[in-house]
Every structure is written in C-alpha cells, then in structure tokens.
Image (tube, rainbow, N blue to C red; front, side, top):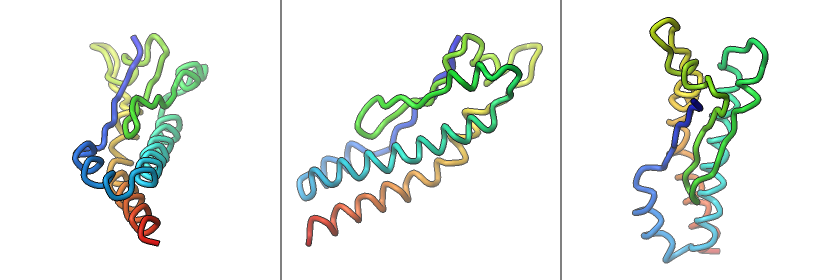
Length: 124
C-alpha cells in the first residue's frame, strides 16, 4: 500500500479567478513555480526523514503535479503507508506528514511573493 499526501493551496481557485484577469500568464507561471518549489523542499525533507534500511522506500518517493497549483507527495513502496502511519506492532514514523507540516508555512509566503512579482511585472 503506497502512501500519498495531497497538498493544495487553500483558496487558490478564488485567488486565481481574481488575479488572472489582471496578470494571466505571469501569475500562473509564478505561482505554479512557487508551489512546485515548496513541494520540492517537502520531498527533500521527507527523503531525509524516512527511515532507511535498504533505501528502496526512499527511492520510490516523488512529487507528482496534479494541477497547476496542486501536487501529491508520493511514496510508492508497497509498505510505505505502514511506515508512515504505523501498525499495531510498529510505531508511525510520519516522514511525509512531518515534511508537509514543516514546509506548509512557507507556502503562503511563496505564493504571495509570486503574486506580487506577477503584479509588478504586469505594471511595468
């Protein structure tokens, strides 16, 4: 059973609808880049936190873009969910959950910076 955590920028649809009218291309590209950059940081952190015996679990971890501003952090090893959330005989390791929690505060800052950059670029 693989483990998947979906990350979506809250209110992204409202923000996109309101700002696309003014700065369509720059906003999409900038925010998409910002979201992906934070996602890569989450993946890097998860790869550092994952327990390693053979390295297989870590080798199956990836970031999968599911929309312009959304992605999934995935560990495809068949036992990934058991390591992440534990079992009745094994404690949860929360390597993916912890990585997402650590980098979530950065998401709003990066999206805001991308929006501001799009606005400044559109005004020049």
